[in-house]
Image 1 (cartoon, helix red, strand yellow):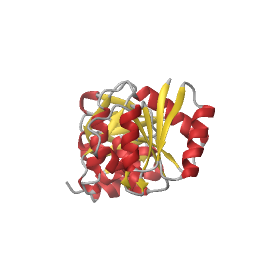
Image 2 (cartoon, rainbow, N blue to C red):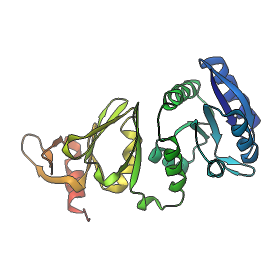
Image 3 (cartoon, one colour):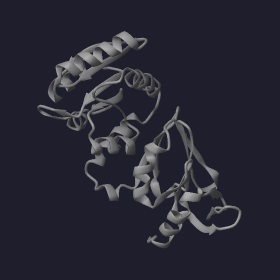
Image 4 (cartoon, rainbow, N blue to C red):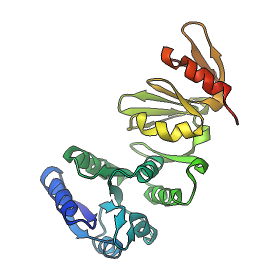
Length: 251
C-alpha cells in the first residue's frame, strides 16, 4: 500500500483529490492532509509518504518554501496548480509531474501511477533541487534540463542536444555519437523550452538545435544535414521559416 499525503489550503480541493485517489487509484491510501507549509512539513516527517500532492500557493508560503526546508526527498512529488505559466514551465524543465485544478480523474490517476514508478528512481533529491534552483535563474540563462526515463534521471546541457524526434506520446533526445534518451512525454511538452535555445521545429516530428546544422540541402524535397551527418526532413510549409532562422542565427 502506497502512502499519500495532500498539502493544499483549499478544503474543496483536498476533498476532491482525496475522493479521486481513494475511489479510482489502486493500492494507495491518503494518510493525511495538511493546509499550509508548516503543517505540511510536520505531516511529511510524521507519515514518511511515498507520494506527495503539493499546492504551490499557501497562506504561509509556497510549495517551493516547503521543499527548501526538507533535508531529503524520499517521495514522488506531484504539484497541484492552476494555470500558472511560470510554474508549469518550471515543472517541464525539471521533469516534475503536476495536475491542473480543477482535477481530471484520468490525469490524477495517471500521475499516481507514474509516481509509483518514479519511487524506484535514484536522484529524486537532485530533481527537486534543480526545480528549486529554477526560481533563482532567469529563463534565458537556464542551460540544463532534466530528462526522466523509466529507469533513470538525466541532467543534460540543452546545448548538447542535437535534435529531438517524436513518436506520439514519446520523445527521443539525440546527442553526439548517436547517444539517445527516450522519455514518455510528447514533443510539444519541450517545444517552448527548447525554442528559447535556438531549436526550431522542422517537421511535425522533429525539433533541431540550429547550433548543429551544417547545411540545408535543397534537392529531394529539402532536408537538413547536421554536423554529425544526420539528415532531418523539412516539411514544405517549414522551409522558409527554417531558412530565415538560419540566416538570423547568432552564437
